[in-house]
Image (tube, rainbow, N blue to C red; front, side, top):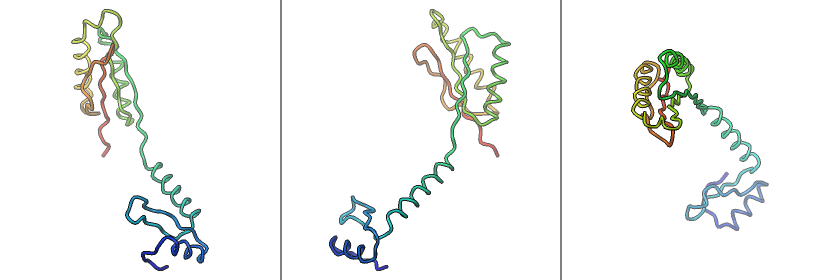
Length: 148
C-alpha cells in the first residue's frame, strides 16, 4: 500500500479501486488523517482491544464497617477482625461512625475510634483518607497494602 498525501477525491477513488474503505483516523489534524482499510475488520480489532483492556482493569471492591460513637470494646474487636479479613482479601475498607440524634456532640469520640482502627490495621493497609465528617457520619478509607 502506498503512503502519501492525497486530495480527498483521489483518496476516495483509490479506496474504491482497492475495494476497501477510507477511514478518518484523526479528524482534528490539519489536514485530517485518513487510512484505507477494511472498516469492519477495523471495528472488530478495536472491540477486541477494548475487551482486553477491560479484562486487565481490576475491579475495586469496597467493604463498609459501621460504628457508633459509643461502640463497646468487644464490638470494636469483632468489627476490627472483619476489617482485617477484608483488607487481606484485597478489598478497600470504608469505616464510618454514624451519629444518631444528639450523639453528634461526640464527634471527638468518633474520630478517636477511627484513628485507633487505622493505627491497629496499619500492617494490613494504609489510610487513603483521614476521618472526615460528612453530615451525620464520619468516614475514613483504608486501602489494602500491595501483595508481594
